[in-house]
Amino acid sequence: MPRPSTNLLEVQCPCCGATLHIDTETQAVIHHREPEKKPLIEDLQAAVQQLKGEAERRNDVFEKSFASHRSAEKVREKKFEELLKQAKEDRSDVPPKRLFDLD
Image (cartoon, rainbow, N blue to C red; front, side, top):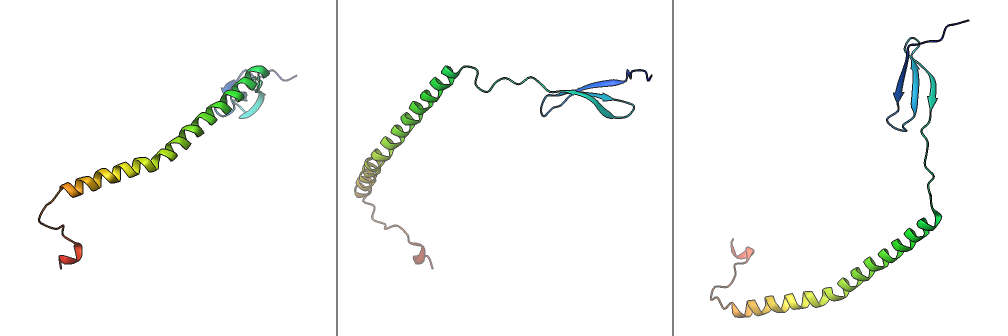
């Protein structure tokens, strides 16, 4: 009867977390044990409440985005009016140079 090998290394897989028992002499995996996995949904009621909360959050984000798009035109119009007012107040005698005048 073969005697049990005492040259076993216990290694944990970095990807899946499984525990591997490797024989150093043959360099083969003798035994492996997969990690215990938690259930995806522990409490069904909590998962439903979380989904409802996410729907409300998405709706709030959409409303804020929609409001900002609606007010963007007013903001651009006010900025344009302010810049136009500044341009009218700036009465410099020298006209701005144009690129094709530099030749």
